[in-house]
Length: 205
Image (cartoon, rainbow, N blue to C red; front, side):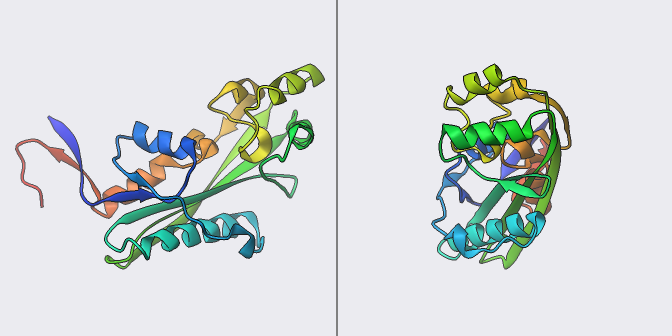
């Protein structure tokens, strides 16, 4: 029989309920300590570098005050035709975003950082997923923006929620679109020895 063990305390440096859900689904135990790092202090230098820089800043901000813990930070943006779509301010901005995404392929970038100050460890990377929307009618857009789901979501939609009907095709990591590339995060935690997969009856090295 094989089982999974976790060594060390994990902290998620994000208030995102989607990221909390994904990590719980992966069977991880963790605390939540949202970072108060000022995101506006980071200039846009290309989508990959931008999300990696932000994720690292958020993670290190929490890790420096919790030196023994492994801290996970992340940042997600939506990019279409060279334009970054953030979180809509209101229904009008959500409407404009969805009209822009309708019938088009956009890219979702999530930068993630896992670091531990006491172990002098810090891993930062980025995952990109291509997402293609169906052609949306005006009625579909109006209905969706009045569900209030688009708010607090980059690109004004939630692929894991009602917004699933908007998506015709994805190429890449699904969880990355939700907000965290779980496969890559778990893979690093295993490599770092934070998460271990053990066969019962064998000794841990």
